[in-house]
Length: 223
Ligand code: 0O2
Image (cartoon, rainbow, N blue to C red; front, side, top):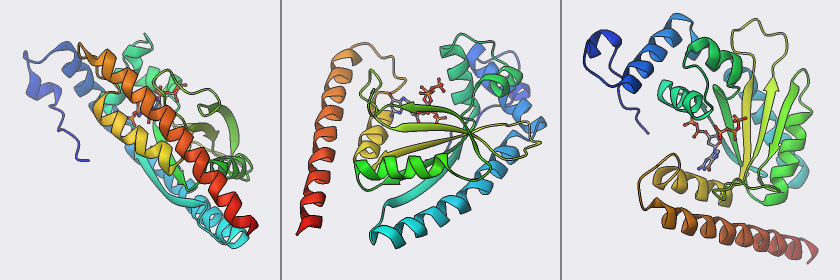
């Protein structure tokens, strides 16, 4: 999706809300400190290993364990929003110090058990240190969100960005997350409460379907 252009501090002048100014300042600071380039380097360092893993897993299981992987660099808007949400000072230094998902990779797997297979393999990647693991499958977020988040520290980094987040989820979990992200996530509109509740019910239904598909695959494998 194309990102809305952020007005610079100069363009905003005396106009613009406090939030717009914070986003513009964040964008400028990110440019000055090469944040995008440094995040991209972390992504480029890890992506080939994920591609290798994809090939190895295919060789072992004779089917696609990983459907595909994507990457993103956190936008200034998203950084400012997260710092506010966490009640932290809105500055690049604070973002670098406290947000560990400035660089992110998302891996989409076919089945639920594949998510654990891939997460397990990611944790064993040579040189990468596992800083934190969050299992939102066994403990879904209150929204209904399910995924595994792994925060990794790459080998011998001299970059100002020390960590990269890898999200691993099934295609079904991803289907829900994409639609929920569009419809409701971070949307504080009035009346959204009922919709949020229904989206959570959808997440539960989708998790049931994910389980059913896994059961079917296992039955087919026995034939
Ligand atoms: P962007 O930049 O727009 O892609 P943390 O506080 O960092 O330790 P967590 O859960 O990793 O814990 O952080 P956070 O900020 O709650 O969520 C990080 C990312 O997880 C989000 O990135 C989403 O990709 C995904 N995510 C988390 N919760 C939800 C949810 O309820 N719904 C959906 N659809 N996705 C979720 P952003 O914020 O989208 O960042």
